[in-house]
Image (cartoon, rainbow, N blue to C red; front, side):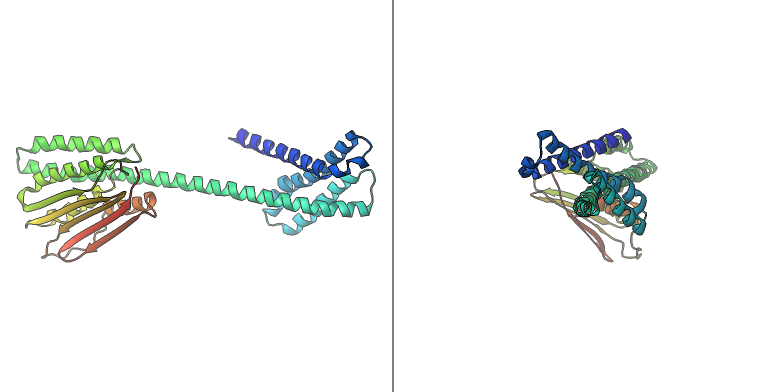
Length: 330
């Protein structure tokens, strides 16, 4: 990495030297007749370029990093003036006189200012790129952490379902174990991807609801509906399931009385409208939910779909309703 950075810096400065030389030669082309030979004309352009680049290099590689960036502005200004006088002396040598130094210094102040503008612009662009790279790395690390949290959370809820069926000595327990196996296989495979087809994600939710329907038997009416074209759209994996898990956990599981869960999906062009509602027990007043799953999905939505989603949660005494609208890509 250091070698690549050094090579890029070297190439940029060689390119800058050649560019300044070309500009000086083009700028003095109208005065070429005042030079005795073509060689003296090129030597004149080269001497201009050397004096200009000497000041710029001293400024860029010594004065700015060691003085300006450390806020030693007075010393920086003093030494910069000294560097400009040095560059002017190189240009007029051996005809040393203060009039020539003054004229050449004025020219070098202009070129040095232009060089500083280019330097700070390039550094600003590089710093912005580094900042974006760091933010992307941080975002990827956080998303991986959040994604890893989904696995044990979902597994814990699913194992609870199997445990409940085994206590009831249900004959469907072996089938439910197989269903869970398929669900876990999908979860493990999707966790390796940034996006999955929306169709597969919705099938995963449907299979999860079928598993829960067997466990909850007849005391919970579960409805699942899809409207619109799901093909061709993709979504971040395991993004919607926390809403469904919370509906079951804080709806049907929180009461022995009949309850209802309604999951509906509507696709309009490339917009997904996802709604989950569950009835609530009226006897016991539940506290506001702050489960890991919901906080996790809120954070993932903020990171993955920062400006293309709206999440509304309506928590009343009788029902808990989640409405999510988000733009998806193919």
